[in-house]
Length: 318
Image (cartoon, rainbow, N blue to C red; front, side, top):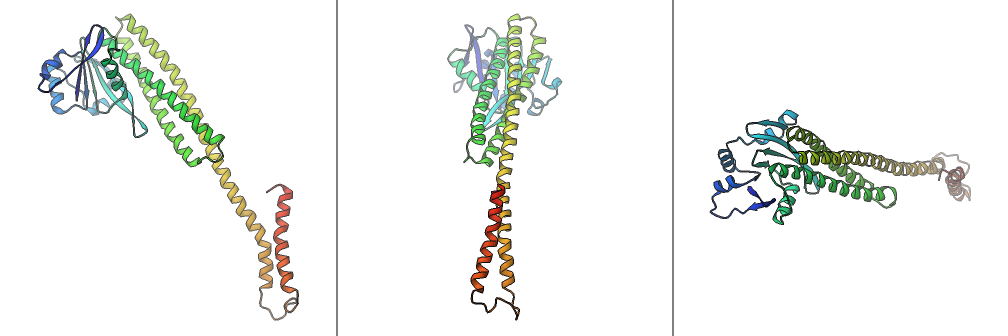
């Protein structure tokens, strides 16, 4: 799907694509072309009109710096990681950004919340920019702001898990471990995106030297990223602490169960010995024909079972 935008009066405005519209003409007029999972026909159309080769998905996913940030005849390339959320889990989507002198092209396979938000702000004419360079910087700035919001959400979820693990006696510890694992994975995805942002900012600072306002904004974004990186480290430490605490509480519960079984085994051992003795079928047994033999054996078994309990209680083992 192609979405086209232009810049009017210092604001981003979406170009409506109606039925029967001349797509070639609209693409030529657009300042920002957002290609979301484009079809082969759409890729060929953009490539032929703009005389550039759009990157394939395999090329976009390369992790080498030289393959993610470079310049060529098509323009300035920034393959940036964006955060996406699907079915309660965070994933990363690589967006290929091609910055030309009069146009910004973004190619992506997955749905990204940052682009939905930017389109919403554009419809309300809230995205102020003079040119496509400012638009790219604005996109990166908004992405970092969304990362900050995501970290705040993760921190709130972590506080709930912390209360459940450390203060709630009836909490499901196994469920808490599952929640902590999800939070750790999401925090790792955010940190990965922030690290990618750092490399993108460094690359843009080297290639947008002519625009002082861009450089100041990029430096400010870099400082925000440094602060967020420290926050992800804090979240990692707290998640690991809660994970260790949860596993420790589970081990304590299991030890309590084993302790109960061990005490039960010790308590029932002496009565079992007494019952085994009086269950022997020998001809000559002193208490075999004794009138009080059965009550005596029962009393002896009860006493031999109670005695360990009294001893354990006195020792403080119960």
